[in-house]
Image 1 (cartoon, rainbow, N blue to C red):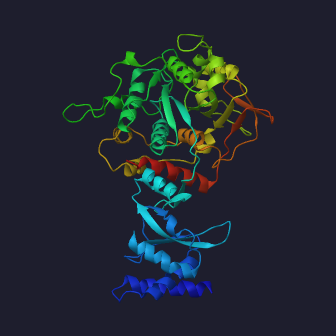
Image 2: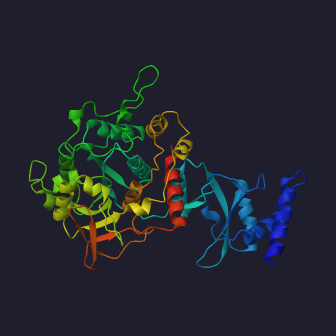
Length: 453
C-alpha cells in the first residue's frame, strides 16, 4: 500500500509541476495525503509550485494543528491558500498520528521572529529545511543570568561562544550580565567590545585580567581585530571603551555583578583560564560587597559550566587548567563544594569542526563583520573545533540535549589532570561525547546562529 501511495504522489506532483492543467482540489488532497505516506519524517509543500522548498524556517499555524486525518486536509489547504500557500506534514512519534498543517515560512536568518511566532501558535519547534534540524521553541522562559568568562584573542571558538550568547539574548533566553577576559592585554578586551557593539549590546560591561599569566600560547592572533580599518583608514568597528584603563579589573567586575544579583541566580560560563575566578574567590570584602570572594560566590552563584577537563580512561593534563596552573589549583580548592559544576571536555567538541570556508559562506550577508574579518585576513585553517560554544549552550539550554556523567568530585593535580571520583553527593558532572548525528546537529545549530542578522 505504501508503494501505491508513493506512485500516486509522484504522478500527481509531476503533473502539477509541468505545463499540464492544474490539479483539481480532490487530486490535490489525494496528493497531500499520499505525501504523508511517502514522507513519514515530514514534508513541506509549496502550493504555488507544487514542490518542496529547499530553504526557510517552517512554523505551523495553531489554527490547523489538530488536523490528522484525510478529512481535515481541505481545511488545511483552505487556510494555506488564505495565508502562505504552504502545507506541511509530520508524524508525532508519541501518538503515531500524522498531522497536516498550514505553514508559515521565515527566512533562515530570522530565527528570533520564527521562534516568537512558534510560541504564539503553541508550536514546539521551528524546522530549518536547509539544515534539516528542529530548533526548540517551547523552552522554559527561565531567569537565566550569565557571566561569560573567556580567554579571547586566541582560538576563535571564543568568538562563536560569545556570538551564541548574543543570539540567545535576541531570543530572550538569557541575560548576559558581563564578559570577563582572563587573557591579559587590552586588545583582547577590545575584541569583546567590538563584538558587543556589532551585535547590538554595547552596554554589556567587560572586565580585564591584569594579574594573570604572561604570554600564554596563542593559536590564532586575532586580538588586533578591534583596530581593523577600511581603505580610508577609518576604524571598521565601533567601541564603547575608549582607553585600556577604562576596563575594570576582572575580579572587581565579578564582585560588582554578583553583588547586584539576587541570591543563587547567576550562571558562570567559563571557557578559558580560571585566573579571574581564582582571584575572585581570594578577594576580600570591599566597597562592592561586605562578603569575601568565597562567601559572595556561595551566596550569588547557582552553577558554573567549564570548558575543560580530561575524563574517562584518559589521564592527561587539560590545556585551560595547565596554562595557569597555580590559579587553577586555587580555584578548585576554594570553589564552594555545594555549587554545581559541569565540565565540557575537549573530546565532546572535537567532531565539531567549522572550516574557514564554511564560516565565510555563512557570514556572506555582510562585508563588515568582526568574525568574518578574522577569517578573511588571518590564517584560520587550523582545524578549529567548536569547543567553547558547548559550555554556553549547556549553560543556557540546560542538560536536555546532553548526556552527562554520573555525579562525583573533581580533583585537579599539580600537573593539570582532572581526576573524577564518582559520588552521588558530588557537585561535578561532565558532558559525554555525542554520536555523529548529535555532533552534526549541534554544529548546524551554531551555524544557524551565525547567519542571523
